[in-house]
Length: 175
Image (cartoon, rainbow, N blue to C red; front, side):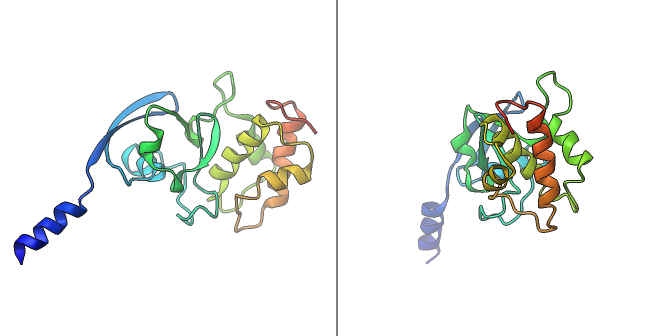
């Protein structure tokens, strides 16, 4: 009986794998269970707690980060899928000159957060939206930000913050 249990445990064990993540311009060599999500690797292994764990099911957008410049839900992305790829979190989102990203300033200026829990994911999605050139109107901003939920209901201020940055010529943005 004990031997059978031991064999079952061995069959269920999942090996660790070496993963090299390039996060916010820094390389991190990790040994991770292949089932570890990018979100858990960022928060628990690298101490980058700016990315929030909301629903942990991919429905709220609080965990949005960029992988190779494209927004992804880090709770639904395995860290192993990001091996050797560039990952940008809210901590690494900066202006081209290395200063504070204009969206961060705009969110503060427009009071586009209340509890602030969803704010990092909102800003990461907004940055992607601007880079994709999809800020043509308030309706466009609402549509392309619809995967990010704000339980406090600060949507009007979030749209205003994104519109403000887009109107100043954010990357490929237009209003």
